[in-house]
Length: 194
Image (tube, rainbow, N blue to C red):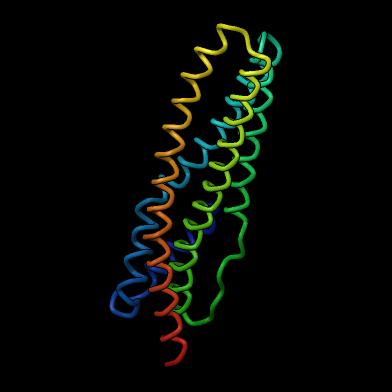
């Protein structure tokens, strides 16, 4: 969400009396306002991580020997893919509704849906990381030198461990946020019926 979107979201929940917005939507809107700093920080971290990965990848290609240039090219592609997936998750239409209560509920549902889209982007990045690790292991086997094997196996072990934790966290997050989204969609449907 952009800065203007956050301001709209904050204005939407602050302009309504507390008792007019259903508790579920109010809770999500308060959560979004509370975590606004984290959303901005997370996006900056994504950008910095991508730039650092590009630099490291370019250095590995330029100055590496053995299998390191292959690793550098893969690193650049992986970072670019992960950033593209994140940008995909962020690109979505903003909800519009004339009724302020329905608008607040729609904004809360959009916030949850954004988190789920980010989780899907993470799943695609995890898939890309696993493909990258498989290709890297193959490159070590076929093109690597003796010193590549020890460092490569340690790197793969670390990468697989981190990716496993990343996958578990993403799946747990998706489960809980999917339940939140179902509840918000049911609330929105019931409000539209009234």
